[in-house]
Every structure is written in structure tokens, then in C-alpha cells.
Length: 124
Image 1 (cartoon, rainbow, N blue to C red):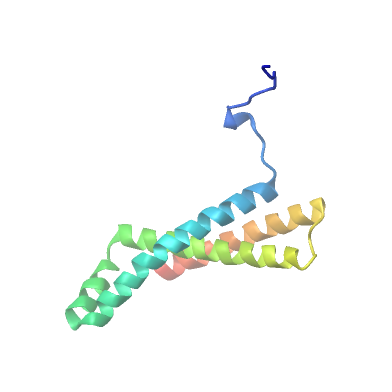
Image 2 (tube, rainbow, N blue to C red):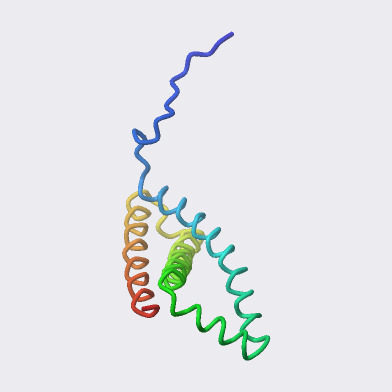
């Protein structure tokens, strides 16, 4: 028996709510932070190993590409923290309704953008 059900494979026609986008990006930023943690810990170990290692890591900070990666890591970390706090507040029973959840997701985006700009100022 073949079921006739609609299949929509065109993701451009699907409209995700802002709360779903916030949740998906929270997971993506968590993966980015996890991978970045390994990179940053290896750089820390190298810089603490010797004077030459420290100078090597310090010289990397002058490269534009490395600064851009650091800015991306800080942006992902800031977003993950902000939306993580939002999720924890929702676990406590607040902002669970559709309207308040949508508003809190929008506010989280705004706070994350501000923190991203501040991270850019700090890196450059």
C-alpha cells in the first residue's frame, strides 16, 4: 500500500519560526565552541611549553585570518551563552508561550549581535 503524502524537499520554501532558528543556531554554536576549545587548548599548551612556543603563538595573533577566526569563536561562544541562558530560563517555566518565546529569541539575537560587535572591537 503506497501512501500519498506531500513531500517538500525545497528548503527555501519552508519558513522556520524565529524560535526554531534560535534553537538550531544554538546547537551549531555549541559544535563550533567544542571544536574551538580543542584548538585553543592546543595553542595554550604550546604557549606555556617554552618561550619560543609563546612567541610563535603570539606571532599568530598578527595574522588577519587568525583574528577573523578568533572573532568567530568569540561570537559563537557569546551566542551560545546568551541563548543557553534563555533556554535555562525557559526550563524554569518562563517565556514558554509563543509570543514571549518569540520575543525572547529576538532579544537574544540582539544581545548576541551587540556582543559580537564588542568581540570584534576587542580582537581588532
